[in-house]
Length: 173
Image (cartoon, rainbow, N blue to C red; front, side, top):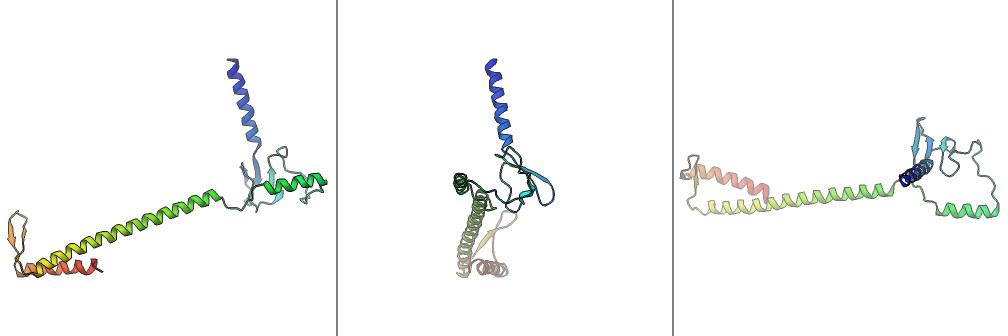
């Protein structure tokens, strides 16, 4: 029981530490924004209300010029600035995800085009075979609605040849 209480107190302390590492600023529309990331570069320094590492508050002075630093402090500040992440305004992970999604869509469109082309090639081959059968002069029969076999007369044959020729024209380009 005592261990559980200690763990809960420790967790409460950790949560409060995480909450203190928050940024707060006023955006261009006057709304307060809370984030665990620094504000974008277009936010003015005077609009930053709270930042982590400065006791939670932004400097209260109206002067936004950096104070003069001692030589040792200047060197430390230079090292910190060099190691700080560069804010480009664009989240690289988001850009990578967007690029991958666009590539996946392009691959999907390409696969769909290939499937359509393959179907057209197959339809073309079948239509050419059917046209060759009709052009050979062999008697052609089909099964009617009643399930009976009937031989095509010249008029039905001409209609079927015309239909097959339309398929060859559209799919065999």
